[in-house]
Image (cartoon, rainbow, N blue to C red; front, side, top):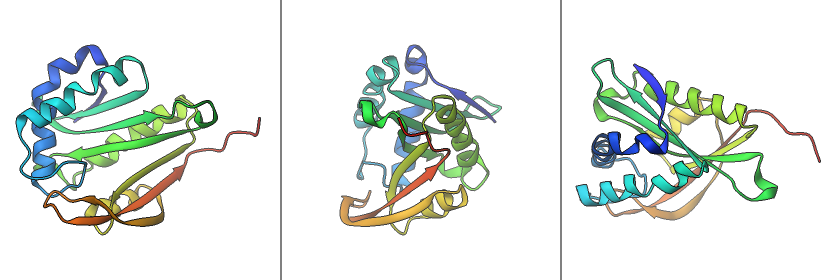
Length: 177
């Protein structure tokens, strides 16, 4: 497996694979902003919507690619853009293909994301995930701390309202200005 950053100019090459990954992830129960049934049109709209933020540098995206070229997973880092938030970034859409789970893909994707966050001096990472989901175990194993949860935050893939759990990880603390 290879972990590689995906710049905006290469997004079109991975459009179909990313759309399929999103569909697979939602169809296997992940709460990542979409409900069932999810169509290719919806998935392609999501991929196409990444172009601007990848191009302007406010979002970073990594792919996990198998030795056979298959897309095994992806993750995104959205950099806070406000002047008082240059110390933080949000982890978004950690997705691992259903047949690839529990094989270290998420760990490797998150290691690449955290290395980039460090290089960009983004010492505080945060994310939200469905409370009670297997994703919580993954984030805790990666050293993220659970801050709490918000009830009835979002509809799961099955259309049922669920709580979201908020997690954070401090990579380093910036000095006070």
